[in-house]
Structures are given as structure tokens and as C-alpha cells.
Image (tube, rainbow over the protein chains, first blue to last red):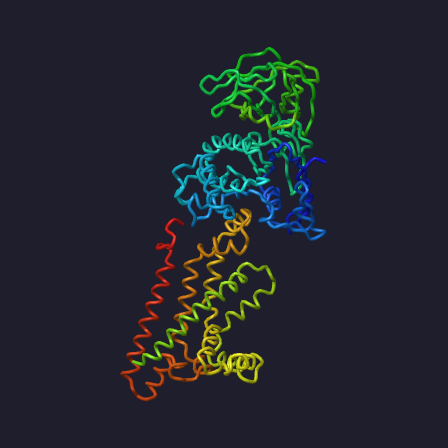
Length: 372
Length: 224
């Protein structure tokens, strides 16, 4: 069997729930696994169990050939012995240490010269030149995050654990740094587990997404798979984005990008998009359906296609339209009757450019991935 | 002024503070970080000298180190003389008597250290012991100095325990507070006043230092 990280844990939260987690992450090639879910879904707890900072009552954690936890035989490998890089949500930088002191904190068993060399490398890699002597309180949020990352990867960990790596930052910094973080993770080539509740972050950073709720992993798969084909209604509700397809930017006119998805052209807002490979994300409630060929609107996207599926859910109907790619829309039962929509009907789907979210996927991204 | 008594007192207070700085740290660490459900029992024992009359504490220490107790017998077998009414006996009593004055500020300081920092240190491969010295101690300096200074000041002024365990032997166990008492008994108010003023001045300066150091606006670590 190929080397993998396997987790099987049970942990009871009095008055809340019993978390039963099962997870397998192949380690070769190294991948970025996203633990995705609303707050309180047990993502951070799972991450802390992986770090050895929390102990499930029952469970088994196996990292390749090494057993990290086996509650039944009382094997509990300490955090020190796991050779991990762990970054807490608020970075937990040591206030009494300088930037340099923080980065070299875990390197005390290296000889002085090797340690200095490693610190130099990390300072260059994370662009912290000139800040070596600063204390954490003197740094901006983005700089703190980079110091925390440098410290976490300084010991060349065999597994990198990041808890909401971008949530402590303000929105503009966050969207800028998420691309940088993705590039860094790809460059590091270390198996990583990243906790987030932000879908754009999950799509940017992840190779594999595990959707969590109530301490349990509901679905695991590639980002596109999880977002476009949620395993059940619960997952669909958590991810909240019904259409996620790959596309590439063919033109960018002052932030209004034209994206080709299987040959179908879409217009979307692309403030932070630099590369050409993107995920195109559209919420079903942002899609308007009309009878084919009628009217001109202010919306930038008019796509025509045939209805391939209709799923009634209470007063609403989820309609899948094949317009070069499967596009999901949600309409009311009344609207469906008025328009006389049936499977096979020809319709026009109208989407405002602002509702077409483009999440950048750097081309480097696919290098380390298996052919999913 | 009885300079011999002053020298004995300062030697006793300094040694007590030094020993408590060493002995108090592991106790405070355990009290802060242990998850043992009966921890409060130990906490209460440590705090006992705060409420117990010094004569009661002194009495029990005297009995415990006396020639009829195993500890006392063992000590006199090894060292050659009994423990009560010696400087070493007095030191031991002072350490027990001042224990809460060191341990409680230490524990309060450790309590203030953000657990996430400690966890970060562990995940960086640094052992619990090294984390203590490299992270927890630097973050707790104010509390450590407070504990050491308070136990020093508290030992300076002790009376009941000294009388019970140390007696009143010039150059050995006769401390400033006992000297003042003797002067008053001998109706030498002028001599008592000088020594008392010295003790007042030292004690007040020490407390000034502690309170100034713990002022929030005058943080020991300006970066925090």
C-alpha cells in the first residue's frame, strides 16, 4: 500500500456531539487537503489531533509507516516527536522573540552555521528581509503570517498543518495572500492539511477537499467534484456553490474577464485574477432562466442550453442546464409551470457578470497532482 | 544597631528567596498545568502559611525536625548535630513559611502565558522542559521577580517561626525582628527605633519595586 495519512477517531464533546472522523490522504505526491465546513464542525479539533495537541478517546492515526496514535494500545506520540509544522489561527508568534528568534526557535539542535543558513533561506523565501530584528507586535498581519509560516516550515516538517491561515487578515490582503500561499505550498511539496470555512480559499489552496459537519467528514474529493456534485443535501448546503467548473481567461478588460468554459464564453469580475486557469463559480440562486430568445437585459451572460435534469426540493426546483457545461439554477415551482419547463426544454440562462466568481488556479497547481 | 542580627536576617532572607526560586518553580508549574482533579488539596497546603499563626507553623516544624522525628534523627546522624535552633533549621522553616509568597505569584504568572504559545513551541519539537526555560520563564519574569522579592521581604520580618524554630542565638538565629523585641523588653526604645526604621525602609522599598514592576502601563516587555 502506498504511504498515506490515515485517521480514524472518535471524540465526544459533552453537550454537543460525538465526532467520528475517517480520513485517508495519500502522501505521494504530496497534496493539500482542505478541511472545509462551518465553524464548530470539528475541523480545528481534527487538526489538533493530527498535531498531537488533543487526544481523541478512541482512534488511530497512522502517518506512513509510523503510528502517531493508537488509543487501544496506548500509543500516543507527542507533538515534539511527530515532525510537523503547525500554524495556529492567530499565528501564536512568541512576543519575546524577534522575527529571527521565532524562525530559529525550533532549530536549536542544528549547528550554528546550518541554523543561520536555514534562517537566511526562509527569510528570503518568505520575503522577510529587513524584519529580522523586529518583534511580532511591530509587524503587519500579512508579515506575521509569513513569519508563522517560516517558523512552521523551518524544520522541514513531514506534514504541514495550517488552521485558518488567512482568517486573521483583512479581506484585500487575504485575497492577495491566498494566491501566494498556494504558490508556496506547491513549491514546498509537503503534504498539508489546511482548515478553512471560506469556499474561495478552499478552491484556491486545495487539491482535495473534505467537507465536515458535526465532527464527521461528509464527502472527500477534488474541489470541483465536491462543489459541483455534493454527495447529499447537507454537503450542498455547506458548500453553497452549485456550479464550479474549470475555465481559462481569454481576455481581461479592466477587471471584466472573458472566460472560456469548454468553448462557452462567460463574463465575470476578475479583480485578483493573474493567471489564466480559473475555477468559475456560480450560485444557483444567481441564475435566471427565461424562455429561449426573449429580451435583452443588462446581464452580461446569456447562455442557451437544454435542461438535462430537474430536482424538486420543497417549493423550489433545481434545474440543470447543459450550456457547454452543466449549469445549475434554482427556480420556484410556479416559475417552472409558467415557463413550461421540462427536461429537454430549450432555455436561456441569464447571469450577471458580478455573480460569476473567478477563483484563480495557478498552472503550477496541476504539476504535483495525480490525474484527477 | 545590631549589625550581626541584620547580617543574619539578610542572609536568611536571600537564601530563602533563592531556594524558593528553585523549589517554587516546579511546584507552581505543576499547580498551573496539572489536570489532576485533586490538585486543590495541594494548593491548599501551599497556601496554609498565609492563614496559620506563625507559632503553630513553627511548633509543627519544630516537632517535625526535632530529635524524636525520623527526619530530625536522620539529619543529626548525617550532619552530627540536631536541626532545631540552628541557622539551617531556621532556613528550612523560613522556606516553608514563605512558600505561598513565592509559589502564588509564580503560578499566577504561568497562568497568564497563552497556551497556544506553549503548544506552538511543542509542535516545533521543543521539549516541555526546554519550553519552560525558553518560553514560559521569559514571559513570566515579572511574576518570578515578584515572588522572589515577596518571599525575601516576608522572611525579613518573620518573628513567630524564628522564635519557635531558631530560638535567639546571637550570630546564628537572632534576626532583626527578635532584636527589636529584645531591645523593647530592655526598654532601649532608641535602639529598637533605629532597627525598626531600617526594616520599614527596606520592606517599603521592596514593595515599591514589586508594585512598580507590575504596573500595566509600565510593562516589563514594552513590545507586548
